[in-house]
Image 1 (cartoon, rainbow, N blue to C red):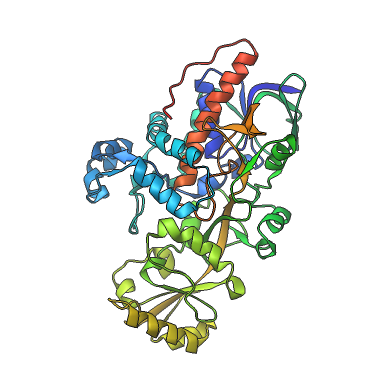
Image 2: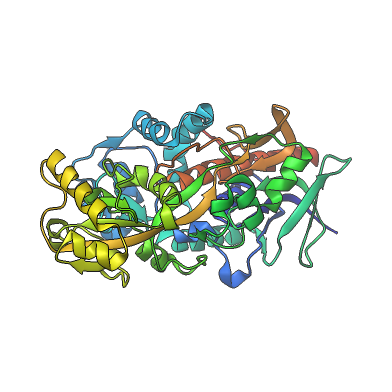
Length: 472
């Protein structure tokens, strides 16, 4: 049997941030268990690129940028001087819905700037966002999520951490000695841990659990993320007595091109971004019956998840984004739209409806009504681009109840030695999702979990954790 001070389940951004923090806090034997093989490591974190954080002033943003872009901070910010904690909280709560853990969200936001600085100090860098849409976070991770994860793995390895691949955790139990005995597939098991951190995402890749919690319509949905997140560690924690939080009937979804595969894999970040269909505020969204079922106004990075959810509810689980030539000719659409083989450019709304099987009479009446109500008109300049879109599921919202220090609660109180970070932590989202908050919450809670777990492990063995200042 292998014994470790700290064991982390899941090698996404949250898990690796936890591992790095645990080693920095004085733990000397820290192991991450990853269900995927090494060549497919990285998790959903490797497929994204945005972290939403509070910031003030050009100098802070400049300090995050790669060397080649440091002098471009003013241009990149385009007159924006800050993004305050209050603005951040307002965006989060306006989009997420009311049934969330506001105190936990506030604590994440208050620590976001410090956590970004911590990540910069061990090598993370940012770059200008290519083809930004209104309201977007102005900078993205240099190299995207794939490079984020490469740098996380490098730092974890440099500090002396160990990653065991092909090691899916199927369950765990608490021993009489207040330690955790983990079971799973692969030669690494069983493993005994002084402290256990769960960073293994939700149950999005589990067909049975999707149908149970989200409903029958979600049984065969395509994944925008990896196929390894089956939810076994989450279920084991609940069986142990952990409290649950968050909306177990909702999930993070996005509008995607119809060529979206059944799931994505690490290394396919550019393919994933190319399939995103987030420019809908520039056009009109309709279903197969020709009805406009979604209000496109507002910033897409605050509403794209809600659109993804609503697409799944439409006839045939498909929708259509329509743009006129004013948008297309201006170059306002990301490249993925123009290169979509399923998209059609037509001379009239009626022709687009006919070619894509949309009810033409209803659609033309809908567009006529919409144009009469709006100034400037939304769709009145041919040719028109019709882009079919489907729903892609990224992660589920239901998870574990945690404190600001990432301690998992059971019966309302922290369970000794058990921590959770990343989207397995519930209470952050109810209905919608503000873009970039997932990676940020994972980093903040991952750092807190690693620091807390190291302290617990060292105390249990008579050691002493290194002091780490965390502002909350």
